[in-house]
Length: 383
Image (cartoon, rainbow, N blue to C red; front, side, top):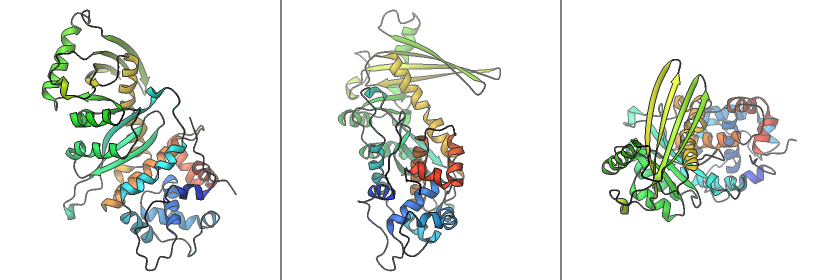
């Protein structure tokens, strides 16, 4: 796995050259770049909000003075909070693209470039006094590089459909395979992905009634004679972990030429199904999911994309909830909550690039305990 390479703090600040300082010109006591770097460092080291960022900075001011300008000392948590509330989330995220590009190319096998798009709610971010429910974030996650590529906030899960095309505008998907759950299985989203040079694999459920029924009927009908009449491919794998055994059977086949509304789905080439049979503590369950995709026939690749999308729950959402305790965060101000959520995803991406024996949770703890390790995560030379 490629490691992040920064020569010094100035290299980090170079990522933010085009970011406009949203603060008033009156009484600017602190350097804009100092505030940004302190926020990034503190979140990696365990901070979960502006107050915690300020406390972390106060307790590490001697070390920070070696790397930052700090003409008026350590900024207060109120100063940091005002900045995070004023920064435009999309502009803030776009600055990190320069860092993402330093992680390195994927190599010649572009099939490994999978981008999983999925939504997650920040359960404690609601503000009943203002009539606001919890914030819903739609994230783009580079599965093979374990990097967060971007996110978009909405006030309702139902807005995920409109958020996905906007999120796709802000990331590079050329040569990638974009995987999305059933909520994002929409014709316009498929059209945009194909137009931008990508491919897609979408989960299929009842929200696409006629298409779902047609795909389900086609696959289950041919399954009765073990797909003897069509060129279907089959692949079976067994996954074990945490006392659970999953046997997953994948079937993939060319899309039938008479499939309902086929002409309305840009690039649609194949359909498939994943049947997961699970055994856990003497309990068994079966889950069946149907898919459509613009990828060519290749059942092992299909299996990898399906499995990769499921993995977003463990590699991104689980880490955010357990390691970063995102669901417990009570930041109410929308911009601040959005920017803090992005800083956590960025921090998680950086921690995942480290090649050592520690878990993600332990890496974050060590970054909080050992400033040399934090410097290593950031790529800053240890003085």
